[in-house]
Length: 478
Image (cartoon, rainbow, N blue to C red):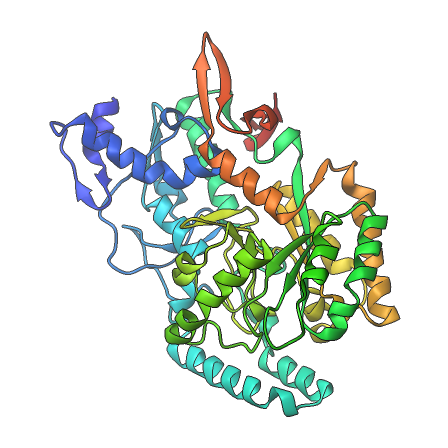
């Protein structure tokens, strides 16, 4: 039966015949399986996917069940360039038998198109819209030094007008990639007629989810508040990372860096001079990235975050850091729209990407004009449901008023209240990056009928089992 099904399927759009080598079929499984196996760190032999048909030349939107919007190429149905149009559901065309799932799309390609924000190049975003954004960005940063704060905030609200009408990615947290993986796990369990599927749990020591606190230091006033902010964080048992601007904004002395690092907090690089131009042109980026990397070595910084979250993931390979934190989960309230559509870390070349999965404080206070933690609580709950990474970005520069500082302390109070209750790992970004890198190299092997985890840091890893309960996927930790 297995050979028959392979004969009907195509691997990456090329038809195969039953007399072609098993090696070619296995290579097809490997390519198709990569995103899934990397996500769950499960034995590759337990999850086999192939493409059932020749894929379309151009990508578009489709649905994978009524609740998951995808972007990629399929071999069936109409794929519009706008997610607001009726979407063709490909789930009924997934064929599963004897442990093999034939899909009408390439799951690794679809996941990569989402994480890398390729969907922003579709007609739904449009060339005109991208040009308008580019011109507006250039004019804004040209005039910014001359504009009063109130005028800048009004201009930003005007620029972001209509953000709440954007249907994809889904606000306030988008876990499309994570939902795709979970649905594929559901299909795999059905295909294998198995009670469970083992994999390496997402976080060390059996933690349910992970949270990191990050502080981007934008001005001299924010820099002056860093000592007090560390006192506040420590009072709640939290260590955070501080992203510093190396040039023009303020002086970055050895003493300032040591005062942060000696207390167990972390230093990262925040662009070069925070003028919004780093990713504006390739030539600008190439001129600046050498100095950025030099500051990283000088400051002993392992991580990078781009100012205003402007980014181009295709250029990240020139950043000589361990990890990046420049990609939002949902970018509706950021000047650069988009989002990676996942609440889990992922790799961009050699970098571990730690996506920003909650609304940054500036957007909450000055765009939404909210001074409660209700939105943050909603986002936390949505991320916890997928056992994801909860990333906060809170600027010391915007905590200088009693109102904003009170809101931040309410957030810390809430995090402390759920820390043990929800089994939350609160870590530094560098710890998360190191764990995710080590986990990506771990292997789950079976010896004498027992599953064992091998690899660096495996003593902190836990085996989890995915199983079906009332026709939905649930996880059990060993």
